[in-house]
Length: 270
Image (cartoon, rainbow, N blue to C red; front, top):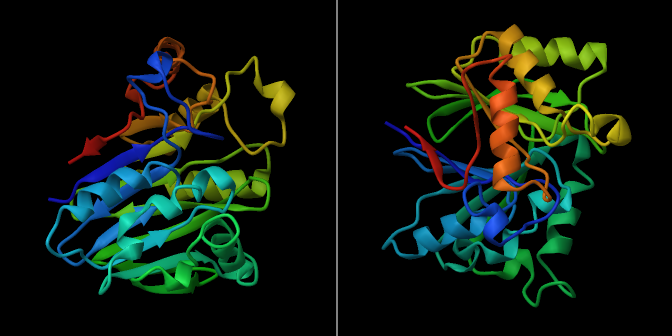
C-alpha cells in the first residue's frame, strides 16, 4: 500500500513559530512512493524533508517531480533537495508542454548562479527535464496521472492520481469563476476519494483578492460536495493564518462538507 504524504501546505512563503506549529509552515510539496519509484508534486520548502529522509537510505529510487506551476513558493525548495547532489541518482522534472520555453529556464534560475552556487544540471545526479503532453495522461512509477488546467496567473495544473487503493485530486492553487474551466475541473474531480483543494482565503477576504488565483474554504467545500468526493483536505494555507484560525475554517467548511480536514505537514494518507 502506497502512502501519499503532504510535506508542505502553506501558500506564498514559508512561515515558522508557535502560531504555525500544528499545521506547519513549509510551502507546497506532496509525495507518493511505489515499488517502482518516487513521485513528488511541487518543490516548495517541504521537499527538504523528503530529501533528508532519502539521504539516510543506501539507495535512492528513481524520482519524478511534477510541477503544478512555477511560482516561487512551488520551486523554492529545489536547492535543498539532497538527491540532486547524489552521484548515480536519477531525477526527472516535468512541466507543462505549452510552457516548454519557460519552465526549464525558471528552474535553472532558482537552482543556479547567481542565486545558488551550483548549476542544476551539474549538481551530481542525472537530471532530465521533460514536457508533459498537452493533453492526456501518463503512467509514472506504476501510477496513472492525468491533469487539468485551472485558473491561476501564468496557468496552473491540477493532478488526478490513481493508485490501487484510492483516487486523489491535487489542486494546490485554483480560483473559480471561469465557466469553461470550472465545469472541466468539476468533472475531473468527480468521484475522487480525496480532494486536496486550495482554501487560501475566507469569503470576506476574497473580494480583495479576485484574480489572484486562489479559492476560499467555502468554494472548496462547495466543489467537494458537487463532485461527490470522499474527503476534502484544505491546502494553500495563507501565510498569515494561525493554527487556531485554520481550526475555525475547518469547522465552518464542515457545515457544507462534513468530511473536511486541513492539510498538515507530514500528514500521510495510507
